Length: 491
Image (cartoon, rainbow, N blue to C red; front, side, top):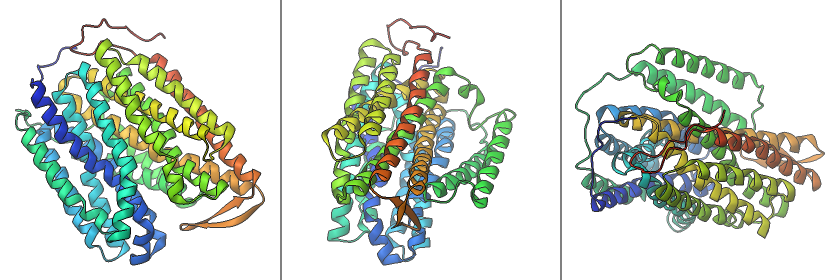
């Protein structure tokens, strides 16, 4: 595939740009981890516990549906300006969150913050695709994975200290100095980033259809994850309307001259298989980050902070896997072996948890570390493979599609596996356990253990699909690589 020459940057310029982008990504990743520990205090101060889940869900829905829009706008109008808009909107919404006096005000501000947050990580990742040669991109993705690890480990700790020593409002105020430094560093480093010379029309109809369809779908999924019955009338209505809107969106994209999500990109095997692998990977690992601590608290009675510490092995293993895959791509120009290895480790991790249960033991730590390494192997390789398979002008859209599939996988995974877990719990002789806005029926002893193990076993079955897909992904030598193409995957 021949593309117009991408802008060339010196090694020093590349490092400066990536450093600025890492600060932007830290801002977005930190917000996803720092807020959760402050939720009880928010509920205490603002009341209306029944709406508390939407402090997180509102941000997730808004960030997810805005991601593909940012991808297309970045390709059309340039990513430097768009990144500035996203950061500014995110910071203004952070101020609104910190000043909120009621729960509806806080949720509305979080939705606005999600619209800004949707552009932070996806636009920054697309800029990496603009400035870093493909063969070296995996190495830089490994550096970026360290940012995620820092946010995963440090976010809850920082949020806990800010809430305890100051107020929950400071988990939002802290974004202002961080965001100001990140915006200054990024804009200073991105002065040479090109702006497209040809202004093309924006697919407003497609943006509305996709945003509405994904919003309703994520709302339905979130409700299921919160304990609402799968076949409840309102859930079925939301799901039906969302599927209808997404079907109309697909029909529209085939007929508009400048589609928001070009159908031709989704037909590229490397793109759709890579997206499917990431969808399944995050289906598993986001669920693990929720269900493993919950299982330890339920089965072993440990404190929430002690349960959260059990995830450190996972958080540290993700950048280790990303670093390994990045070095592999740098030296070989190939991505497929790392995808096969990563998707092979994930079922092993899930089966270990299914066999032994989520207890605070060494084996659980090993299983979580394996899941982290697997995630680190599949995340950068799938992104780089997708970027390698499209023209340079479509890198923003391809990056946004990958990010969208990753987010959707996490949201759907938590909802599906949580629903399986709660259904299995309710099937046994149980005592009522009050949690959030719904009462969850908790079986005693072995029944709860069985419910968790079977849930992880179901997750293991799903993860096998990702491994089978990894064998079928086509491998083409990374652009700028001297390594020979491995050719098509076997059919």
